[in-house]
Image (cartoon, rainbow, N blue to C red; front, side, top):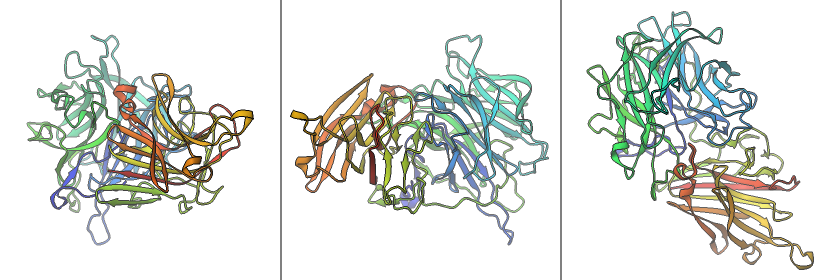
Length: 594
C-alpha cells in the first residue's frame, strides 16, 4: 500500500514504515549497477517479514529510500515448498532473514508446529519477485536463523569464488539453563553447495542481562575489525529489548555492550504510543548512514495492539565502537528525518562486510504503485483500496491477500467475470484448516471495510460476508445467511448475522432480517466500521448504514487472544461443516483506512 509523504516538505517520514502485522523484519541492501555512462543506479533494499500460518508466506518488499516499501513477491509461494496445513495459529513460518550475495537472494526461516517436515529451511532466488527455490532443510535446534557472509576481500561485491565463508546462527533453549526461558545463540558454518551445516558448533551468547529470557533474533555483521552480534531478549511483548555484543573473531568470544540494552521501551510504560520494540536488523546506506528495521506495536483504546507487530525504522550511529540507536531520542519516535541513501561513487564499495550489503542482483522488479491490482488512492489522509475483480490481473489475486495455511483454490476470478467467486467450504474460522477466507492486514486504527456479496444461502448454516480474524479462537464475522424455516416448513428469509468467537465460544451478537431493508435477494453490502476498538458491523442500504452489532475489538489483540498476530480482514464463506454447491460472488471489496 502506498503511504503518503509526511512531515514538513516531506523531510521526515512517519513510523511505522510497514503498518499492520509485519513482524520480525529483516533487510538487505543491493548496491546499484554501473550504467553505460559510468554513473551508478540507485541502491535497492529488500525486506522480509514473518507470516506464521498465512499463505503465501514471507512477503518480500522493495524500496530505494528505506521508507516507501512495495511488495514484489513471497519467498513461500508454492504449496509444495512447505506444509502449513496442520499448523495452529501463531505456528508456521517464524522469523526469517534475507541476505544477498554474488547474484543470489537467500531467505532462511523456521517452520514450527507442523505435522509435516519442519525446522530450519533455506530458499533462494535470483529475482526477489520469484520464483523461489524448493527449500533446503538444515539441521539445528531452535528458531530465528540468520545468515552471515564473511568475505575475505575489502568489500562484499566480489564473485562466488571470493573466499566468503557462510555462517548460520539461530537461537534455542539453553540446556541446561540457569533459569527458565534462558536461551542461547549458536553458530555453525554453512556449506551452500552441499546444503548442509559443517564444522563445530559455537555457542555465542546467552543474553545481555542475568535472568533475561528469550535471547533471539540474532544477526551478525562485520564492521571494521570487529564482528557484532545483534539480538533481542525479554520476549516479543512488553519486556522486549535489543542488545549487542562484539568479538574479534566470528566464533567469539563475544563481549556485551556496557550500555545494553541499546533499545527498549519497557521502561516507558504501557501508555507509551509504541511498545514491545525489538527484533532489529541493521543496514548501511551508500551515504554511510546506518539504520535499523525492527518490530513494535501501537496499542490503542487500552493495551490492545490490534494491528499486531509492525515494522519501524530508526537511525543508528556508532560511538566508541558500539551502535547507538535513535541517538538523542533514545526511543522509536513517530517520525525521524528521512534517510540519506546517498549516491555511490564509481568503484566505491560498501563499508560493511557481509550482513546487510551485497552485490547487484540485476534488474529491479517494477516500481508498482500498490499492493493490489485494484485502485489504490489517498483521499484527504484516508488510504482507500478498491478491488473490483475486473479481470485485469487475470486469475490471480494481488500480493496483499492471504489465505490461511494452504494455497487451495477455493476461489475463482473467471467463473463469473467481474466477481471473486468463493466456494462455501465446510471449514470455518474455528478450524485448524483452510476456510474460505481471503484476508488483508488491518493497517489503520480506524477502518471501513465493505464486501459486496451475492449469495443465496440454502439454510442457516450457509454463510457469506466478511470476517475479522486473529486466530481460531478470536474472530468476528458479519454474514448473509438464511433464517431457519418457519411454521409448516416455510423457507426463512435472508438475514445478516454478526457472530463473535472468543474464549472457546461462538456467540451471535446481532441479527437483522434483510427483507424489510429491501435486500431479500441480490447483492448485499456487508460493512465494518471500526472506530478505535468499536467494531460496528452492518449493511449498507439505499437509506444509509444499518448497524447490526458493535463488538469490542480489543479481544482481537494478542494480549487478550494470545499468540503473535494482529488482525486480517476480508471476504469469508462457509457451509459450517457441510459440503454444499452454494457459492458466494463478491463483486467489490473496499478498504478505507484513516
